[in-house]
Image (tube, rainbow, N blue to C red; front, side, top):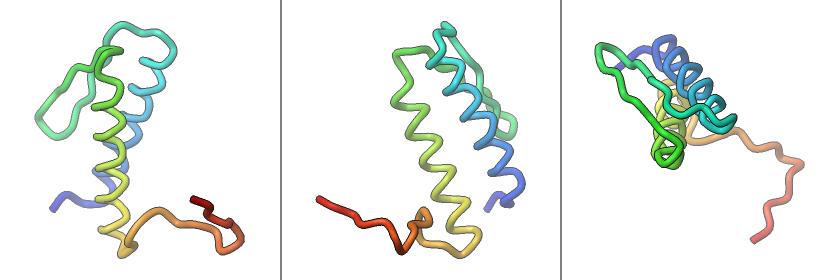
Length: 77
């Protein structure tokens, strides 16, 4: 398994790429390990999925089951 520091670096890169796409950039590249993946505006959902996957991996590596939720937040629905 990849260490948390590496996962967090990949997450920061992915979030920056997502931000660039949302601002109208035509393509962005995300590097993780020795792989590079290019995303275009049509792939924003795939990039968001990758970000969610990294967030889950980081939470698991830190011993958490999911995103932290405040006990004061009422979830409706």
